[in-house]
Image (cartoon, rainbow, N blue to C red; front, side, top):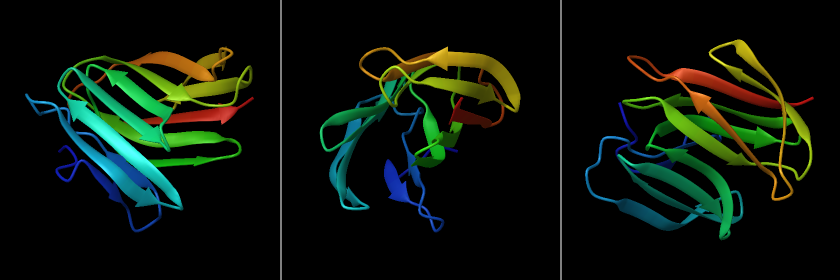
Length: 135
């Protein structure tokens, strides 16, 4: 399915970004979203999203992300890719979050001092819902 415009705002205010089908690296910079400047770099090996030059999301290999939404309690999104992916998200430093993939809890994980939290997602034929909610 992939996000052909690489980065877009959905009608519900969430973000969709990334195109895991591209052979060549592509990017969109200075995309205005809720007063911030977003940047996405994406292709088969990697997808990365930044806000005002700071880390938000990265997957290896690349993914397509739909309806990415964050608030004070965490992050929710749907992810799609052609193979299993390691996803890293930027959250609050030293906080604990419950990670659910496709409705199944992966347990409570704590971010490192940089606020990053990494987990693996099994991807295949259909998009997978992910929720990362503060514990």
